[in-house]
Image 1 (cartoon, rainbow, N blue to C red):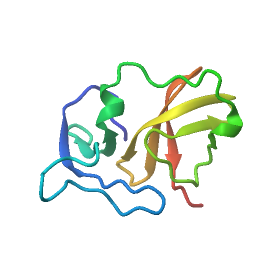
Image 2 (image 1 turned 135 degrees about the vertical axis):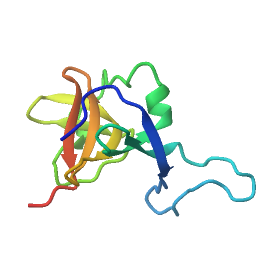
Image 3 (image 1 turned 90 degrees about the vertical axis):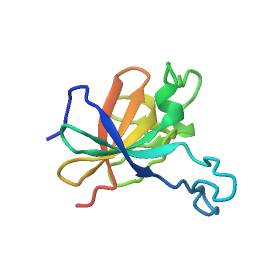
Image 4 (image 1 turned 120 degrees about the vertical axis):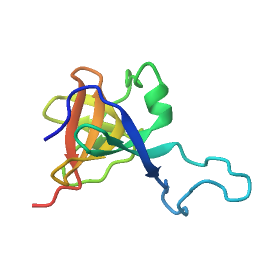
Length: 130
């Protein structure tokens, strides 16, 4: 089951980011500078593992999509894989949101946390196969 209480998170490892046509970007071995701000963290209570974007987490206000149309966003389907920071349109709710983090639930399913403009924060499935 998912932990809904505030709990300490432990860093499990660094996540590599990869844009289309680019190589994964880890910490630079020469300078030691971080090239990505995505980390895998684990809840110390429920042991769910989540992908957290430090920039998004430290941002006080989630990005607003005022003036953005649904056609400019990615249509949500549970089968797709999403990127942190990606703008997503949920057709059933007629709402646009930003992917804030990712997690692997205790049952091994992949989930994304999206902050929607109208409905607030929601946890939705991603990479779901039937």
